[in-house]
Length: 147
Image (cartoon, rainbow, N blue to C red; front, top):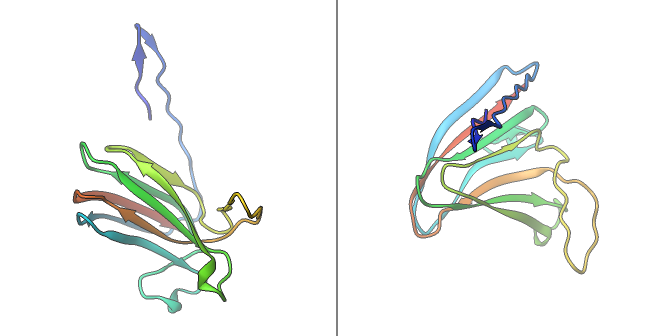
């Protein structure tokens, strides 16, 4: 929901998304220490492969909110475009400003990585989400909904 009044003109908007079959919610606040990278979620095709991993086929909604009032963080979306060769791991980095949220649907076949020397239009699974807090400790709210 956005509540915006600009020059006495109302630009507010409310959108509702209903996702059927959700039967599992993970909601937590993660403290990311200063000067460290913290993996806040990992996704696998079989959750027995890694303790605490979410089943990538079941995840339908992800929301991350930077709860800090003044410090941004780097949100790293890591993929592995060739599970047999770890040297092909790729990531996308997004600055998540103080108080802002990042929302994503299913992490399955959802990310493409492009480099200036390689054109690869395939979509890959999200492997993990890592937060780089820089020199400040921050709290990140993590909500992951699964079917």
